[in-house]
Amino acid sequence: MPKSTTAGKAAATSRRGRPRSTEATAAILESAYALMADAGLAAASIDAIARRSEVSKMTIYKWWPSREALLVDAFLHRAAQTLPLTGPGDAATRLRRHAAAYAEALRGEFGRVQLAVVSECIANTGSAELFFARYLQHRRSAIVDIIAEGQTDGSITAEGQPADLYDALYGTLFYRYVFGIAPLSPAAARRLVDTLLRPRP
Image 1 (cartoon, rainbow, N blue to C red):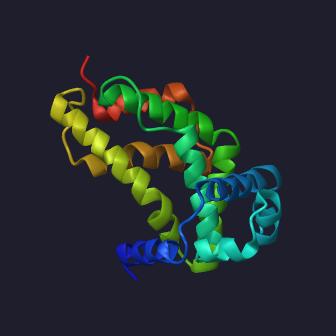
Image 2: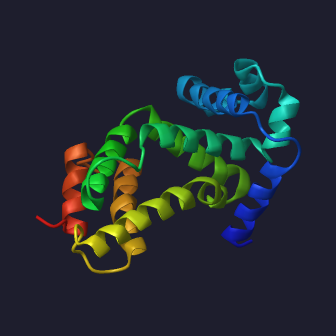
């Protein structure tokens, strides 16, 4: 099934029924992430998330098509808080800051949870398509836009398609994390940005 179809079905499912409560949604997402971070993926059952968030299981099942979808959304919620894509500076400055923050986050619980969620999606669905549809395509598109912005305003001098440059940068960071290839540090991430994107001096 095409990724766009999967994403469309997920979005349609999330719109069914009564409008979501912002507070209840945040409580569910934060509870799901906290359970994954504190006790591992197995601890983040729908029952446990409902107890911790004080939101009924019926509500959770109405708002998410599957446990895996909820866990991916919880990770996206934390990523938006931990690794914001906005801030001062030109495109190159923001990307240096974001790549460094991502490298730092991968060294802690954020990295462990990301890998666990991707693994869960693959184990239960046979691919990482759900993770792409509900998480990666949104973050990837936003950063691709920043790279394109930098190429337009001249703060990034690298030629090539913004999507290819994104994959080279963030794919390298994640690949090194997954396989434990050093160096993986904020300083290394900033150097990688400079090497691949060639920011204007």
